[in-house]
Image (cartoon, rainbow, N blue to C red; front, side):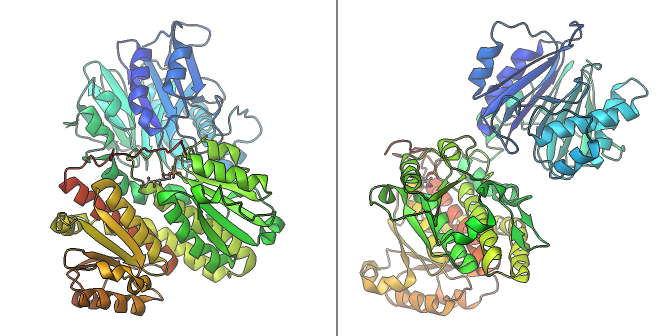
Length: 619
Ligand code: F6R
């Protein structure tokens, strides 16, 4: 989510780091910072600059300043802990002010670490990363003996033994201008190897202009990097011999991590970012969620009589899934309103209404206006947003970031799944105050924790989905059908197909077909029906029989092991089973892939479809 770049060599580090940050800006851009080690400066031995906003702001701040030094680290941030402020921007330092770190990931047990470190520490930020810097500092003081870089590496190793969470980490000590230490757990880190100089970054992109020789760290590995060598170890101090790999990507491809488009990369990101969305936000023992950003007391929560979910497009389909969750778990009547309608229809809301604005960008003009309207009328207004520091995040009185990371393809994919994740957690949090038992809460959370693995299983079937997509790529019209919680899935599948392939498509609840749309059916109008196991399974089967009888070709999405699906359809795609409320998280993936592969087969500009913009900031 955030971006890291480090340099050690013979050249001046600052221009290299700033240029690297620019290449990483796509990973996060709410604040940035740079620190360069300058042994010639007897006072501080370092020069550090940080700023809120894009890299431009940092560059303006740095312009005209003297930043001397041939080793340094830099970071561009996508806030997770603590707001978007200069104090929260990386690099952070330890208590001595000599150890600097840049960190991607989340330290889950940062509160416990802070407690163990005790009162002697002064923190200037609200970040988990600064606490990690202090922890490393404490271990360094305990272990320094050889006065060599190995001391620093061992101190980092020991500190990391106490850490639960994820990290891509680069550490620098001003007493050692000849080495950097890098460690990885769950957050990528790559070392770019060149002659007399080395680079370290969160992905190859910012290094490609300098070298194509890379060492990819694996989870649980740590590296000691000097100008002439890269030595790698496990966190248990065993040497690991790593191969230097030759990367063939150009810069654009590197951002896509080898995928041909951002959209497909982002579809494949889903298992990892889903974990980011739910991590640390539930209590398995109590069978509940705790989304502190809600900013409401339990009494206020109990007084909520109505929930309104306001959103546009894909976000509104995630909201529809949320409606099922709120009604089933919390028993609170829940409506989904398309923002552009809500804002003008003089909605009835009062101080027992809870309104959530759901938005990837946090900048959608209609959603912002609708939320302002709800606030004016006295509702509780909260945001469920991806982009940190965006207008909706700032204007609402609380809410939750979905942590999907930057979504660059215009068509939204991973943000949709993470919106559903947060809505489910909110529904559970309300449900546990009302009618959900511990056991039911625990079952739901256990199923939620299995979702990333089941997403991976679903993604492993991409080739099958591609074959089916290519078979149907020449059709001019499609129907998407679903019932119950699969109806929003049908809507989302249909939207994805039309926006990136420009194929006409309609989505209906299965039971509505006979009220009109069935007239359109013909062998030229294939039907993509979602028939995974749920309460309406038998009814959906009947609807599919009806479409089959009209000569339509049927592609079915069914639950693993459902052999009846083959008899009913021309093509079947299978997904693993999960709890009914969570099934959209798996069912949507084959539909995203289906739309993507058709659009790619038709040669469409998948990431930038015609007439669309990523962030709709006008009415
Ligand atoms: C569809 C899509 C749009 C957005 C909609 C809302 O793939 O991307 O339908 O979902 O414009 O945008 P956000 O979520 O930024 O408010």
